[in-house]
Length: 295
Image 1 (cartoon, rainbow, N blue to C red):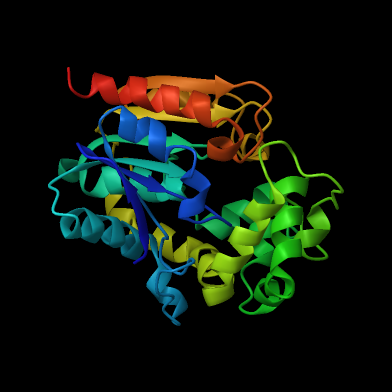
Image 2 (cartoon, one colour; image 1 turned 30 degrees about the horizontal axis):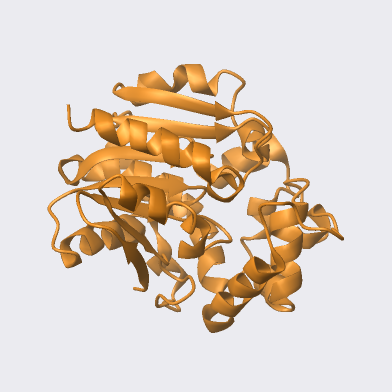
């Protein structure tokens, strides 16, 4: 497992999402380290500089939580605050759910915790969003892999700067816009760095996370209706397309699943890439939350 690290003090793990890497957190290292924390951001399983097992089944939520547990131990720590963005959110929430004794606090960006559904996840996805939803498109091994691996720079440019719709009937990149000018928070050097990092493993490992959605539903049956008990924080972007995946009152419902929810930060005008678009506000929110854990 490849990790980036800075600072000394209580451990804060930063877990990236799709299609990202440790690099998504590049603006958060200095402020969190300055605030007195040991900040560690891994490339998660299948991403960047971390190993990418060939078997799809090796990317289940239990494997991903197991990686976090092993990382905490490998770093010589007994506990951590676990922060996740996008797919890193479910990993963070499930680490807090399955191993609460290791989690001093948990924060999710973009993706909230959710109740385990009554039917397999992909059945629900098809029912609510239709057969052209991007998560359905990702299920066929090799298909989205070939599309996204064909031109890594173009893939990152379109996905990170031109994400427009979750519908991918003719391919995932068809749901994005071609952009001539990058947004202020993203540079050509950033695109180049993401492409360089994905040059090692490509997109297959990251896409295999999606190919375990029904397996994750089956594996987590023992935790049906269980609560996430560690102190928690949720950060969302006002313009994040992911918000449309959940009921309009999903924020109001969070305390039913996370009883020690200590804050919700709603960033107006912020899209999906929260740690990169609004790093100063994310750092402030996290530092404020972290301070409550020591009281």
